[in-house]
Amino acid sequence: MSQSLQIEALEVFDQEIRKILLQIDREKTRKKAIRALQRKLEKAEGSSKAPYYLGLAIAHHISHQYDRSLHYCEMVLSAAPFSVESLWGSCLKVSIYKSLGMKKERFEAEGNHILIMKKIALHSQDPNHREMAIAELRKQFDEGDLQKYFVDSLSGNEASYM
Image 1 (cartoon, rainbow, N blue to C red):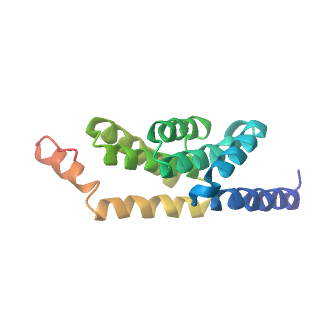
Image 2 (image 1 turned 30 degrees about the horizontal axis):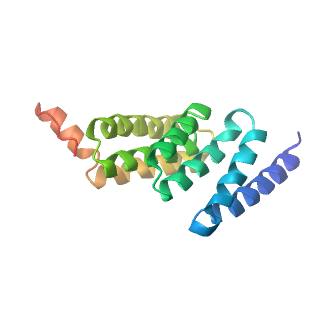
Image 3 (image 1 turned 120 degrees about the horizontal axis):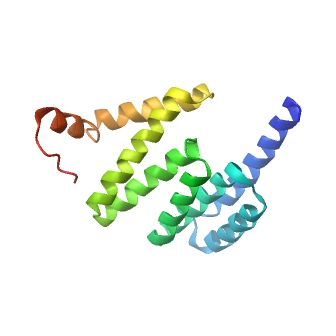
């Protein structure tokens, strides 16, 4: 496939998924968006399924169906382990576990999230993805989300994972 055809295909894909994702926000159109994502998912192959899994995870999160949201987050991580979609999927997992008060699961999800950010920052071919991962790592460290783990591990104290 030539470079111009690839760019054109990506633009069409972006427009289609953007239109579907805009419907997720409103309760009235969310079911329609979920059905559209599921139809697209059936046609997709391999790592191209990741954006649809992520869309489904977000839709179910907004609907407060956290078990389904976590399922689709896992599907994102398995379909495209070190992609931007997996970065957002792992971030959503951390958020869900945090809101549910599941400390152990949250800590494991945070570790996975950090690993994904690190892999993207070091190995991504896209400079925008690298910059985004580095900015996210800095943000989390500056906000204290990561800092408490480093400080506690250096001082020999057991970290509190709240």
